[in-house]
Structures are given as structure tokens and as C-alpha cells.
Length: 126
Image (cartoon, rainbow, N blue to C red; front, side, top):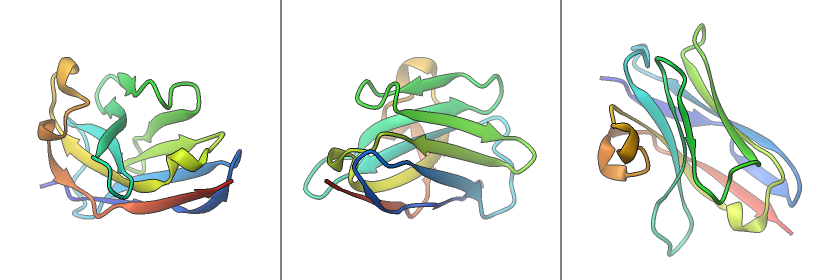
């Protein structure tokens, strides 16, 4: 099993940048999987942010983050990154990475993923 673990959250001001990381605590590689980022703000449903297919590098983004957030991977480090630029207070949420094998049309669905990290908090002040 690939058990993802996130890091890199914290406090930021509007306009700042943060980089989140998602690694595999079990030591198993992400090869053959897709890794997605979701976020959940207080009293809101979990929402899809971005995803990357480990093999091939296909990427998907939510419309709300296109042009501001970038998902990438480092094969040697077995790590997926989420670069958050031009942060806004509405980006405040707990960000989780998830592992699965979704088809392209299902990358934004939580049900497509079966391993989830505990999450890392991002708080953006105005």
C-alpha cells in the first residue's frame, strides 16, 4: 500500500506562495498511480484541486486554481508537489493528497482514490 504523507502547509498572507509536498511513508513508489490534491475548508465539502499521473505526467486542475497552482513530481524523491502561488483567503483549507488509479474523467472524484494522507493546513490572511 502507498500511504501518502503531506508537508509544507502553514500561514501565509494574500499574494504569498507555499509549496506542499506529498511523499509515501511506506516507501512504496507512486509508480502506476495518480496522485491528487484535495482541500477542505471548515463547513465545506472536500473539493478537488489538482492531480498528476505518475506515468506520463498528465495533469488536471480545478478551474479555481488554474494559473495559480502547479502540480509536479520528482521521480527520484518519489514526491508530488503542489506549488501555491498568489494565495487568497479563500484558499484557506486543509490540503490532502490522495493516491488512486482513476480514469481521466474521474480524477476529480474523491471515490477514485483509496489512500489518503492526514492533510496539512494552509491558512491565508488578507
